[in-house]
Length: 307
Image (cartoon, rainbow, N blue to C red; front, side, top):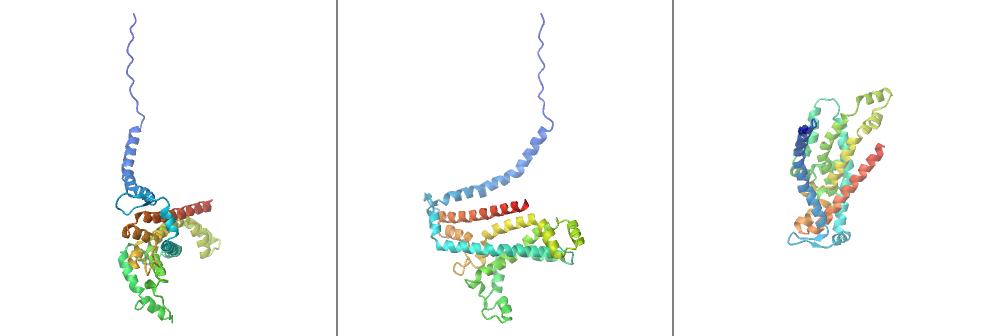
């Protein structure tokens, strides 16, 4: 009688490199997981709570009462909110193009080979890392209507009706825009300088051989090559402009009156000074959707331009 021999156990085969891939995946997660946890805890969850609070009435004590769209109906009739929204748009409409132009001009100027270029780049960037409180104090002294050197300088040209700057409801916002542009143009200059390093020199040489002037080379070579950098700078500038708060707080505190009060400060005032967190959340949501809408429009415009 024939006997059946037991088949030898099959050895489990492992795909080559599987262990290494699992190890690399684990290492990758250890790097990005803390960032995801921090984003979810400090940004995503608060934003979701903000969406909920925008439909409630809550003064930080007790439970939030659901009020539906009442906060948004209140926004439509709030004249202070209308003025604050206008101030925010006013600041962004002037601050974005002025900073963009100044940063690009500085980058073009300091992209040349000249003596002391590192020093001048440092000087241009220095305001961005300087204490904003010190900046506000110095510029308030410069803008002083009676003893400030700016008005004294303008007086040399025979101007009689000199601006009151930070104490004038008309000139306070232009003063803030000037300081904001001066402070941030050094940072965005660095981004443009990095973008200028990617412009191929062969294109400039070919255009020069074809007889193109400096202005024509700037328009037809430099600007198209800087399009990705310009797009990034514009998006960042737009978000920063709509979120402006610290400079205005320390320079004018929203005054005189509410002539320089912006949306971010209005949110702070309603939420943390008047304990009206429901209404403050509604205003914050308006600011959020303005930033999202403008950014999406910029993305779509840039995408269409690339076609």
